[in-house]
Each structure stands twice: as structure tokens, then as C-alpha cells.
Image 1 (cartoon, rainbow, N blue to C red):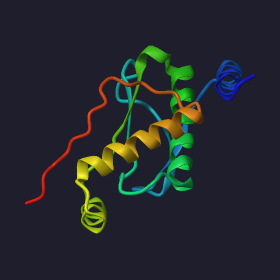
Image 2 (cartoon, rainbow, N blue to C red; image 1 turned 30 degrees about the vertical axis):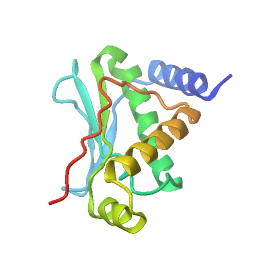
Image 3 (cartoon, rainbow, N blue to C red; image 1 turned 90 degrees about the horizontal axis):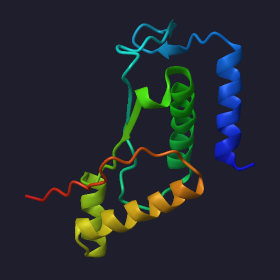
Length: 142
């Protein structure tokens, strides 16, 4: 059984056996609170993605895997149709500007190449994607 199927089977079994009350640590009030979506028919997750100035590293993968599992869990609890997960790529940043200057390449060239590499790695990890629009926003330097 592949990784994706294993995770899906586990989450279905867990969600069906337990009446789900999801608790998260709220760092603002410093305690665990029950998660209740603003709109259970439109559960939204937004997560900052990698800053593409260098190749992906283990820290990038950890973040992606943890939130992929949470996304799958939410899909089981609230229904796949009702959960949206958005992750961005930061493609303009001081680190990217410096990298472009150091190696003498355009920012767009660096970010497109590194973003493509990250997508390849994520596909190997069998990350569940909801790709609606993949567009890198390339800003210009003043």
C-alpha cells in the first residue's frame, strides 16, 4: 500500500471511531482550544510556503508533510469538498535578491528553477495538492 492510501485509511478509521473534537494550542491565549471552523462548509487552511532562493531542505519537507496530514484529516472530518488548502511560494525576498546578485542571474530564472525542483520533491512525497492556479508573482527590483 502506498503512503497516500495508508494515511487515508488511517484517517478514515480514526474519524469514524471517534467523535472528533480537534484541539489546537492557541499561542495567543497560551492554551488548547477546540477548533471550530468559522464555516464548516468552507474550512480554509493558508500556509506560507518556501522562499525559493535555494534548494529544498528537510525543514521544508517537515512543514509540508505535517500540514498535508492535517489537510487530509480535515478532509475526512469535514468532507473533501469543504476543505481548501492554499500554500504560497515566496518568489521575491531579500534572500532571493541577494542570490540573484551573487550568481548574476535574473530572479525569475532562479525562482522558476527552484520552484520546479520543490514541486518534484513534493510529488515524490505524495503530497495531496489542490492546484487551482500556479503562478509565480515576479516583482521587480527598484
